[in-house]
Length: 116
Image (cartoon, rainbow, N blue to C red; front, side, top):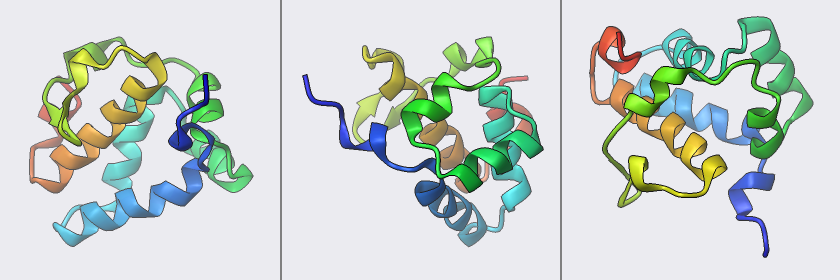
């Protein structure tokens, strides 16, 4: 079975799009980072290292220190698909991140985005 194209894409190539989407709606890069750190367990230094290494999405999630158990609370539609119904684990992780950035861009409060 062929890997989905996004799995082999560099996380660093998509990251600026996350930031741009958020900033266009008055949010900040640091809020995008906070979401990514919450989801993956990376700290800021390790996130920067992953960006610098041009790590692909598959490796980015494989090396994540601790995926947040509360991510299972992320519900809703992204790219026309309900994130909670995605069966492929890696694709689900990627779509969780997309959904969180989308919520940020839509003006949702950080404590709600981070499922507090």
